[in-house]
Image 1 (spheres, rainbow, N blue to C red):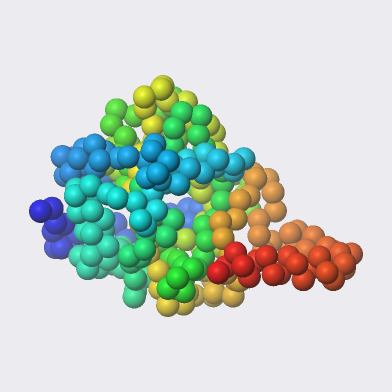
Image 2 (tube, rainbow, N blue to C red; image 1 turned 180 degrees about the vertical axis):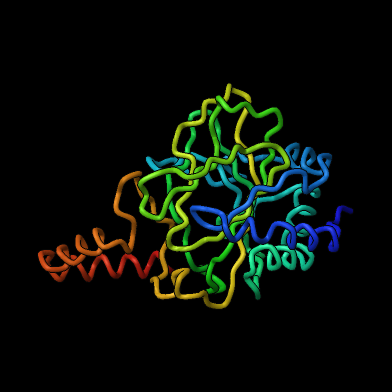
Length: 273
C-alpha cells in the first residue's frame, strides 16, 4: 500500500511555504515528483471516463471535459491515491504549506475526482463554486495531480492563472506527469485553460482533482460573498464584485421589472441547493 512520508512532507512544506504565499496572481505552487510513478501509471490505466455511464460529460461554450462523480466506480490504485490525498498526513502538509488551518477533505468528491480533456476540449477562465452544497463548508484549496506522460508544450492545456482584474494571464503551468499544483480558492482566483486542446487523437489531458474546505473564511478571501456555482469570466470582462459589474447590477435592478428580479433570486437559491 502506498503512503506518503509525513516528515518529508512537512520538511517540503516548510521549505516552500514562503514561495506559495508570495506567488502571484494568487497563492499557488507546482511541485514535481511527489508520488511514485508506478502508482500514477496504474491510475491512468484505470481511467474509464469515456463511457457515458461512468462519467459526466460537460459540453458547453465554457467547457468540454469528462469528469467522474461520487458514484463512479474507481480502480483500487485510484482509490488508494484519493485516500492518501484526503488523509491526515497530506492535510497536515497542506496546512503547513498554505498557512490555512482546520482543513477538511471532501468525501463526496463534489466537482473533484478524475478529469479528462479530449482533443479540442477546453475549460474557460472561471472561479470555482465557493461553498460545498452538502456539508456547507467554505472552499479554500484546490489540488491537481497531472497524469500526462511525454506532454508536448505545443499541445496546449497549460493551467492559466489570471489577474484579479482579468486583464492578463500571469502564470501558465504545463500539465506534466507527476506534477501537483496547489492553489488557494478565493473570489479572485481566476483560472482555466481556454484554448482548445491540440493534442493528437488517442491522447488527452488527465488529472486528479481534490478540494479542501474550512468552517468559514477570512474577509479578504470572500467571507461576505453569497454562495455561488462556477462563475465564468471572459478575458477583459469586469469580474464579479468589481465596481464596473456592481454598477451594471445596480442599473439592472433599477430598470428590470420586480417579477424578473424575484425569478432570478429564486433560480440562484435553487442552484445553491
